[in-house]
Length: 97
Image 1 (cartoon, rainbow, N blue to C red):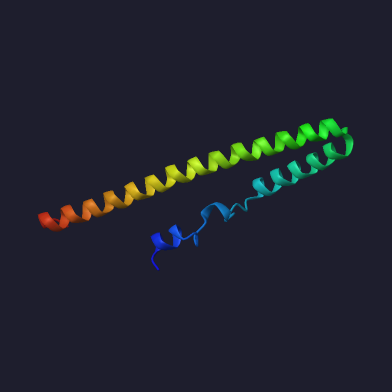
Image 2: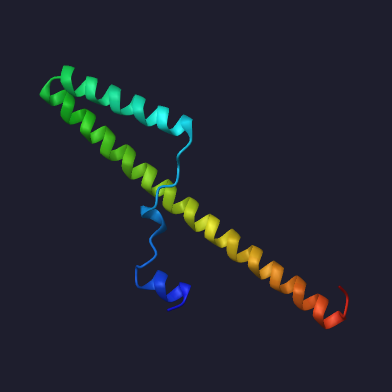
């Protein structure tokens, strides 16, 4: 199978691959986890429910942003490839290197 077929059949899922391993990212996720755990311990049940709704809504927003950024990145990558192929075709047809 080629790349497009693999993508079509769901064998390539870029949204499930996490490649962020910077120290800033690790520190930020640790802080988020620690504060969330502290809030869950200290808040009342209605406040915890509100916190969970906030977290879920924030995750939805992050997911939408990620999808939009993926689409833009994919389109830019395709445009770059088109431009590269067009440049090579011009060189071949004109005989210029």
